[in-house]
Length: 517
Image (cartoon, rainbow, N blue to C red; front, side):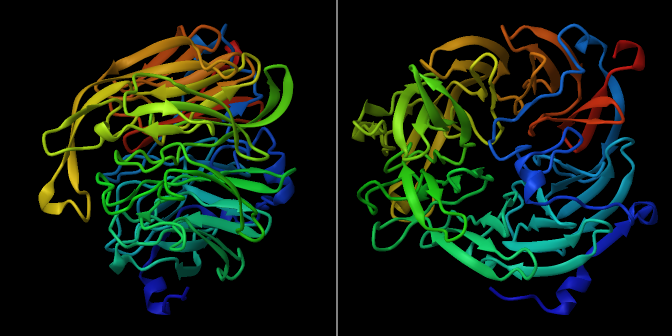
């Protein structure tokens, strides 16, 4: 890992508006706050370490949600869709699109500062957000660098190279802070790229440890890109991270076996990076079904026994419930049409059916390459026991291409049919309790639930939605005029609860008028 030259840092531009009025605010993100976030914050990607994306706030209820009104809107004026989950600390929101970070007043939507990363050759497919720790903002650039900014004014503290963009590496992930570790994953879909998860020192950026997703001693494959922030159990002192597909992507002939640890959920010690256990939702994947979807941590009863569980709605179409102490399977069921596996083995992992691998003549597969779900966050409501997810039932034709069958993408897929639907899954059985249709040929937004019994999300037509968590019925909606690709958050400031959503390049903050509170 190397520090960039000063000239590179100087190229970055920082726009500061009204920074002096915020310069004396204390940035209080420490380990204690991350473990127990207060109601006036959303200090990490998922809100807390569990990934449940469930809030205890109750000012907005099923009875008054229809009175929600727009508090403010912020336009980034960038030709990029907001895919990040904003971080809220000390009344300031931090969010991103590729190459850009904003700090915005969470009460008014006023811009405080704006940082622009220098032009680069990285993959600009999306950016998931930042991490904040002790007055510093950590941001992954498209060309696989980690940037540390001053949270007060957006000025650069340091920039380090995590991986070489010239070899095909990139990064889109929001970092995760655990103790004195800034944990970040790296991506790259080119052949012969060894991907990894890395912890760096938050003060210096120096590498603390690396976990190799595809260790050469275990597999002939490469790949395993990581591009979503993991979760953390402080009692077990384990982080849980999802990894992506092996390469070549749509052919497995050159990479026999399961291709460990691609398309896997890995449990790592955050202090050493050592692997404790791994579970593989898609062994020997040949359909581009990354298993990076959020590993949601839930403590509760399962079939009459108290368990520490991990739940994942996977891109491959299966819903998994694991014992997160050891990675053992408790439940594996499909949550939509799935036809690529021949059975579920004794470990709870699907067994790929060889006749469903891409072929020159084409093979009909469910789900499609985008998967039964994707990066948009699910939510777990502890009161109903419902795991609520933005799903995408779909069918596709997969082809292998002989001309490039040993490298790169090695094929193609053509979507035939799909729709968006919010599904509420009973984690005890895997049965779907209710569904809410979102529209054809697309997906909606991520999901947020609250203690008052509300589910916030969005549909394929660009509508923000508030649903009744008990039955999925619409209680409120508002049109945005653009597609929705992020997950909502909620917070409470000065006695007012806000729900923050985004659409296209605009952030929207919703709240109740005073008469309705």
